[in-house]
Length: 257
Image (tube, rainbow, N blue to C red; front, side, top):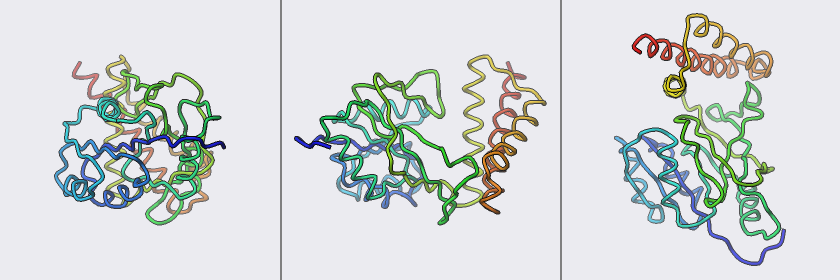
């Protein structure tokens, strides 16, 4: 790729009680021109670690939903190129070079880039279990995107222009312990239920049983989770538990309506 001028990057994070990740993720993002952390008033040392970093800017703001918080964070960015990561993600040296090539190239035309992710089960790679094709938007031009306002969890990036997928993978350290990942799945499932309730979706006993069962079958059998051994059983079960939590909460909301 052709390089003529250096483009600047704003790295963004939204956080809540991420003290175990903060030092490493902030160091990992040190190649960015600015780092902005929007923290939801963490009760641990997350905010202190950001302050101690020196380069990162801390903004504390109450959490409403993921779309609202990420949209606010993006508004704070000084530069057009945005690198938006989660605290449990890491950029490899190869991916960093690819990012810098992209943003400094005058031949690239895409407005946004997907990152494929390598899912880490503690310190081991999870090769299957539905994660082998997992990808998310992580690099994009602020001037060419916005977050869809009708989604409150697993926010949707609306892109004006072309999207591409980078070759090198992002490392995703999502699973640190059983209880931690279980809590995440139940939280996401509950938030998805509220999202769908607002759209008029209904929950039923059938859905709360069939959908989680199919989720487990799909990821463990069809997506080859059994090849991940014990790790695959655990991840596929917890992902199915998240689906169960969604329909359980949706059914509860329907009863209250």
